[in-house]
Amino acid sequence: MLVFFAIIVLSGVLLWGCSSGPAVVSHANYLSSPPVIVDLEKIQVVEQESLMCSSATVLDINIVDLVRQWTKSAFVCSGSGIPLNVEIVEAKLAPLRELQSAISSEEENTYVGILDVRIFIGKNPLSSRTSHSIHSKVSVTIPSHYTLKERRHAVLSLAEEVVEILHKEVVRYIDTQGKLRR
Image 1 (tube, rainbow, N blue to C red):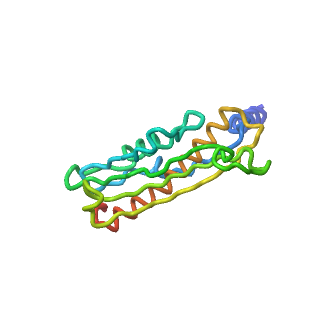
Image 2 (cartoon, rainbow, N blue to C red):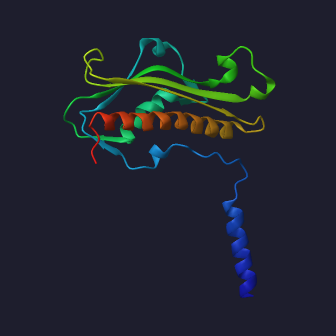
Image 3 (cartoon, rainbow, N blue to C red):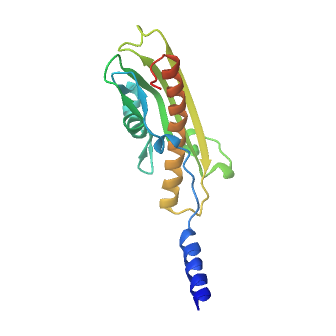
């Protein structure tokens, strides 16, 4: 009787752990890592004026908003010194068919995340000693049988991967500028 009960419990645990939907893995390590401590007054995100009119949103996911959230959750600023500016030059999160006119049928369900930023320490980019440009582009093909919820989750994972590339490069830049606390 005890063996029968153990088999039923084990089967239930195994079935409960299985998901009926597809597994979408998040590539955003910055979400689960402790915040990076930096010797900066603040980190501010600025968009170029041309981005204010364009949309970087698909399935209610906005890549510019993710960048803003990233600066608040991934870093702890000392509050002294000078600011780090993250200037968003280009931000796109869209189906490939919206970005390219000629696509094959295999690319019909491909989504692309593009993020171009320029980072610099100081209040004025012209007076900054160094600046650094970061370009990240990631694409994912989402199977056509995915539900809207599954598509949204896959696009969110794509956007987080784009921001993860930005995160690694910004941390590297801050370290080369001697503003990373160890």
